[in-house]
Length: 394
Image (cartoon, rainbow, N blue to C red):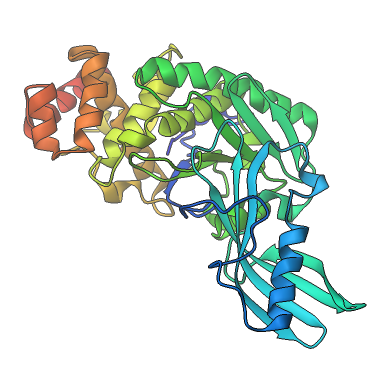
């Protein structure tokens, strides 16, 4: 998540703390969290032949139809394309097959992505033919369910644009993502894929549909990241751009957004439920701002105002402070304080110590991680942070 403040917005006053959050959604099934990959064109479900001839014929028809990705998706680098049928319902000359679509984005997904589908067929001339393919009831759509998909490739990025997105805007995003990847790698010098997948839906409503949430939750946001935390093979994270919020940003704001989100992608394997949100969001901000030249007063105006009026935070931001939908200024202070905590750690203890703290905090308690990496405790770090805030904003 990331607050992008007034200076990065076109036509906005410099002091306006308009927050454009980059929401980190953990294990959102946009690309699925399933395991295993059926053979190409597999539609056998459990592999046990059906005793019902009509059901058996439906499964065979789905297998033949799904032997390769549709021609309309030819520009997308898909591999391992397979529909695995789990249930069939026959209603006279119509049939409905519940299936799990498995696929990989070649060069990006280390494990298959998944999507629950409902395939509709009709019977004519003694055979079944697929007439519709859609998300299963309650399942999230794929980008191509919303219309034609455009593809732009960068050196480090694959950008998929939804219906209505121009090649020019997608090329710009690919160029911005290409800068974000090495910036994230410089901040996070640990092995990671070194590439990012960016989805650009056609509208805010289309973005909300992909993520399965109300559109109002993303209004004004620049981008969100979906993915699964922890080690092990998994589909690549998808950075999902809100075309409306992203379009309000200056070039600097867009770069900050994508570098922040790409840092979440880079640190995914080291991020667990143990990782404090202030550290996860603060490190992503630190990566995004470290070469920007912006001062704390410029990048953290909400916190600066609070400290100057005597409202010094009593503790590092708690997880609940990152809940959006309430006080936008308080939310901005949580992100700004997290960034400044990570900035302090990097300046006082070193970049390597910050990275080590992040790694250890995903495996151990925060007090243990702090003792091992910074030779301090939460109270000591909090005091140092408060002193730093006072110096910066006095």
